[in-house]
Image (cartoon, rainbow, N blue to C red; front, side):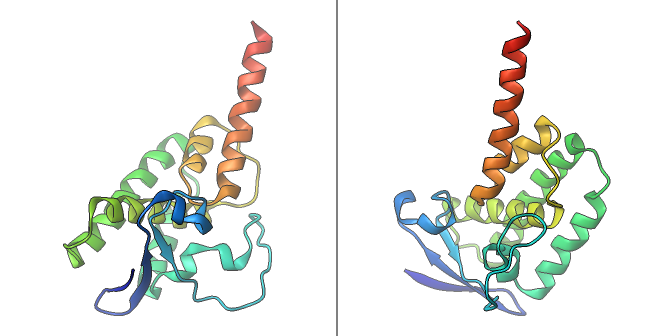
Length: 166
């Protein structure tokens, strides 16, 4: 089923999936498949994502600006605090959509919260290695397999280091 959810400026095309197994192209976590507006040939960014994988580009310009402003504010904040702020941002992101479209299901709201988190991580990701558990845990929540793999690799390495100390 495909719907167009719109704010007062611009619509976002959303394909609503009925099960987790059907949501394939965004790592099987999403129930919403956001259409990309970027038609350029795939180019890898400094953070390892191909340009057409960036979910941020599927958002209206006004929302992209808000996400970028949050990222700018969080850029120099330690990951422990950044992780908490990202969580609050993603919940607010979903709540804003719910305010515009009260008919959204809980499942769709959760997917929108994950979309907000992922878009903010896209902006914050510099391509540098994961350096602490808060960053790793944040990356594990992303829609992107790229972010998840970085988070998992860091936590596995840390787990191995801790087990070799005992």
